[in-house]
Image (cartoon, rainbow, N blue to C red):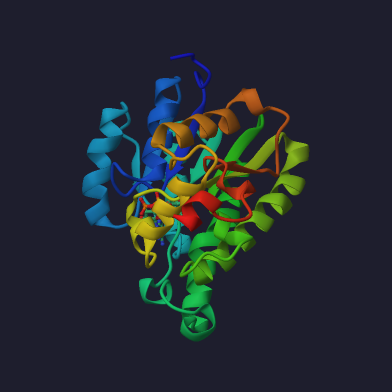
Length: 266
Ligand code: NAD
């Protein structure tokens, strides 16, 4: 416990269970003194998120479905009742696409309806959250979202999620430019593959996981602690001069151009 986040109040969006990336980040932020509020999507997840929040000393647990703007506004109204209309940071760890379209060729499986839905939930929701959060960050703040390397390089089966993550990363840069004059920083963590509910929705997720382990410079996948530590950096004053960044937490996988020859030849 360093107290790096002492006095900071933040909203954590995207905890589904104790494997969620948002949960790993929340634990690290709590360890460093942050006061946290949580959102959940739907009553079933709410029954899981409530007890998890309690473990981190929080009873601020609000429903939020980002597909429904009235729900987003109600979440911020609920938050204001507890945080007095102020906010220091937000973690947006939300993604969704029809699982049936995260399998096979992008060109064959993608529909207009799911394209729009995926982009609305996985990308534009970050902008809608930023619009509302920024009004509450009167003395500056930090917004963080989660992305994946399938945004700039083709990963089998990642399909429309890759397109959504590319748009999300572009949003990070536009939001950073717009909100920078108000002292609000906007960044993304690009995490390597992790075993979560969302991760399991992508066909052959296990193959991607093992490929990363075999070929990343650090020869391992990333842990919750790895992602939590990088999030702590981007949400705390340690990264005070950093905005608009896509920060890789992927054991270095993004720098590799081809699989290891010794593995290919084996
Ligand atoms: P997860 O399933 O634990 O979390 C996804 C969250 O999105 C869930 O809490 C779910 O309730 C929420 N969500 C989906 N639709 C929503 C909606 N309409 N309204 C509100 N919330 C909604 O999985 P995760 O892997 O922790 O995913 C968190 C983020 O990390 C996602 O953006 C994901 O794309 C990203 N990410 C994941 C990996 C990975 O390998 N797991 C790697 C890089 C980035």
